[in-house]
Amino acid sequence: MTTKIIHFQVNGKLEKAEFGSDCSAEEVTDLFRAAAEAGPHHVLKMYNREGTVMKISPRLEANGRESYYRLEVVASDLQGVAKASDLDDMEHRLQQLEIRVLQDVGGTPDTMSELKSHVDSFKRKLESVEHLSWIGLFKDDNGDQRLAMSPPKPRTPQLSSQEERQKVRRKFLNISSLQVTEEVRELLKTPIFDNWQWEEAEMLVLLQQMFTSLDFLTAFHIELEVLQNFLFEVYCHYNNIPFHNFQHGFCVTQMMYGLIWLTDVRNKLGRTDLFIMLTSALCHDLDHPGCNNVYQINAQTDLALRYNDISPLENHHCAVAFGILAKPECNILKNVSSEQYRHIRGGMIKCILATDMARHNEILNRFRSIQSVFDFSNKEHKEVLMNILLKVSDISNEARPMAVAEQWLDCLLQEFFNQSDTEKQKGLPVSPFMDRDKVSKPSSQTSFIRFVLLPLFSELIKLFPCLEQHILEPVRTALEYYSVMEEASRDEEAPTKP
Ligand code: 5GP
Ligand code: MN
Image (cartoon, rainbow, N blue to C red; front, top):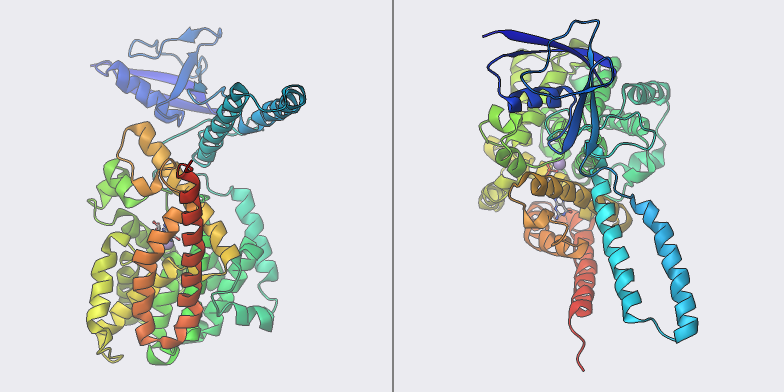
């Protein structure tokens, strides 16, 4: 078997590919596809120095470093279609035409209505695929973003650029010594806190405030600089995706912080347990790739392979958290005893793994069975409670003010739709609750609130009745709101009686 070496330039970088003469055409194409970070629907073209297109195959002629080829991703089957914004113009012209026809004829002819509904539906379709831009399906208008779509795998979604992150770091460090006002400190302790008003550097300061006000720096001998490095690394390890991003990690942490202050767990659990809860909340979705466990398993992703289909995402989030802590400059646990480290590590692993919603009923039932005899001196009871508090925080968006929660729902649905679009594209099973053709905001929320949120929150409230007004009442209000909306859309769909 002989080995062939091909030198080529792709995305501005000089690369070298090596393959054996026994490779199939498909293997060779896949090799270049991977090098170009292209998806299965992209078209690759290889040019030689004369600009002639070369066929990508095992027979591709070997070349020297100086006579490298040029590999280009020239198109995808989604390229070249009009953008939704282009249709605005068409829609406007249609409106003008309609006005004239109305003046002339006195009504909208059927053909005109039909045309309008076609434009609408086409526009909806286009808007829906534009959401895929976050995984790089669409070329950016500025043209210098790479046209690369690869299946979601850890760290592939576009992270905020290096430069952007450094800007956030500089701003965070600049403002970190400023006092957070009394008003904001109080708001941070309640579910009415509005995350949308804060930018990332400010959120990092607020996280620093949470760690400080719970006395963690003193209790675990954490140097402020190490805490800041840790928080910044956490920020860097959340991906730039619609829902499971740094803002989500922040919100879950803030809700956990609120629950700690609104209840008396602050006095009933030890400092170490509180630390486990807050840190687990912060790290619980690190490096989330934007597609859930079902996708990971069905698509046989690297994560599913690595973790044998057992909570691949949650295992990954936790491993990334300890990867950050393994860097000495970020290790907020470096001054605790090895026994305490083992305890904290064990606690965080249990808490983060418990956020897998596939284990929801198992964990809720465990809590139900001990709730009436709950004992704060029982280690197992405390562990279940810590899991429950993280689970509650994780899915607590609907406990927030309507305006805050609704934006989160938009983000969640966008991520769901992105996943189901990818699943459709790859011929994988599609979860109905993620399917843009089957889901609406009210339908998504009424069942989630009824069957997931209310049973979980009600159980926690039996132990902490004071939480009712803070988390249960807003959720009930949200259920009413979405039920009315759902009812109204049902009425709209129902055929009108003669
Ligand atoms: P996470 O993935 O954030 O760790 O786990 C929470 C999961 O619960 C989400 O991925 C999502 O599937 C579901 N979830 C959380 N909040 C909501 C919500 O407001 N509505 C619906 N329908 N699902 C939610
Ligand atoms: Mn989460």
